[in-house]
Amino acid sequence: MITESDFDAIRPYKDSEVTGVIKRLLTEEAFIRFAQQLFPGFSREMIEKAISEVKTINDFQTKFIVLLAQHIIDNTTKGISIDGLDNLDPNESYLFISDHRDIILDSALLNVMLHKNGFDTTEIAIGSNLLIQPWIEDLVKLNKSFVVKRNVTVREMLTCSKLLSDYISYALNTKKSSIWIAQREGRTKDGDDRTQQSLLKMLQMSGKKEFAKHFKSLRIVPVAISYEYEPCDAMKSLEVYLKESDEGFHKTAKDDLRSMIKGITNEKGRVHFAIGNPISEILDVIEEMDDSRDKFKALAEVIDYRIHKNFKLWPDNYIAFDIINNSNEFSEKYTSEEKELFLKHMEKKLGTVEGNRKRLDEIYFEIYANPVKNQLELSKPDFIPES
Image (cartoon, rainbow, N blue to C red; front, top):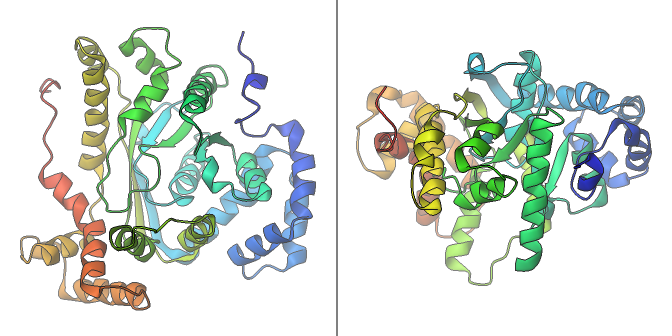
């Protein structure tokens, strides 16, 4: 019989572990400095007092994470919205598979919106490559995060993937906890959101049932996250540029930590979440396909179709599309003032970035233009019956 102790290597912390973890965090100078960066108006004493009052996982989320997220919303956004929650049952657990734009915020802001609307918060999949310090691992595991092992050997990957798959199924169906996981490893750098079939193959590893029955038991819900201004757009542009121009370029752990902080502190404009319907009946159609590879491809196409269709397009997206295509196709979707503001924002973000400015501009525009391109090219997969 599978129990939670089988997943000690990757699972989030339990209430019984919270007090000890909090004591460790309060001795970590790096954690205190990190918290002071997030809450610049708070003194060290105020932060230590707030953290020391945490006794349970729910305490940590409501007294720290929800307050942090609300602080981010109030200070770096022009508002956050969500639709589609009426597709869900607050008493059910779901596997939210979403596009991935920001290391921390995608799941953190979704959890705030779920909390505000009477839903339990999700457990969060996070790559081990981001746990660059022990205090970061403590912090995210307090926030209901479980670890996805990265940078392991092929043999280890098989074992790690099976453990991860088993844990997700266990969390959904035994713990009755919802899960958030990105549709791909790492954030999309160019705005072209695509589900990796390897993710779906990992999820299938816990299934002793046929394809459709297993994926129905996971209750997959596609989620489209859209930022008016991507908080790390300039950093993504530089990363893509360096990968093109510097064969020796490798992103460092320090880069990831910087991205986390910039994602939290940089302006985002408006933010929207679109929650899709749980994927269910179409799985019976996919089940009839002969080749298992076709099944995974088909399920990825369904998730992508729903994310692309539900993605909220802002004026910035249309502006970037028109600029990169040298057209006025969507000029009715934005004003000249909005275009000027977008270009000023780009200049502010890319102004200090070194490199070929023409190419950097192109990469930057692609981040915002590709969601428009995906909606223009949107076509329902041919195996989905017309409704």
